[in-house]
Length: 147
Image (cartoon, rainbow, N blue to C red; front, top):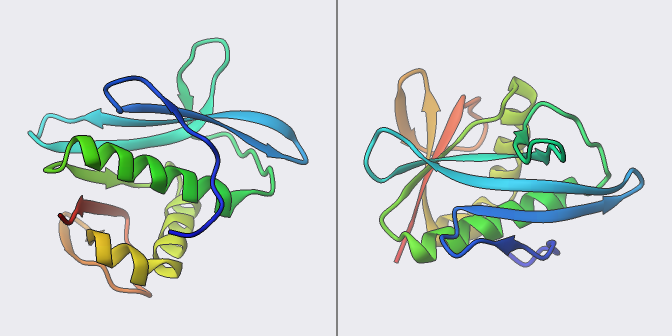
């Protein structure tokens, strides 16, 4: 995607990324983690502000730093990097709240034509996944990189 994004830092395994959001509320440290699940090859994409005290992800805080598009583009760039190292992985993402899941759906819809060139994209309705379609209110998303 040709959207401005933040510089990412990562450990060698490319499962944990960090960057700094810059805006009216100052510099806010963000974390992205690709967490292995009990299902082989399936990873959960966790994202949020970095809790400075614990180093954990806080996915409930609302930063509102005026850079949503740039932040989401940065998360997508981490997704590309992760998939380069783990090409067979499936990545699941869902917001910690309904409004965040809606924000992710809006972002996917906005950039769908570019994303579908590089990823197989699915939306979750209930317990089932189907090919992503604009306008549906999914509760989660599943992606796999095309190679």
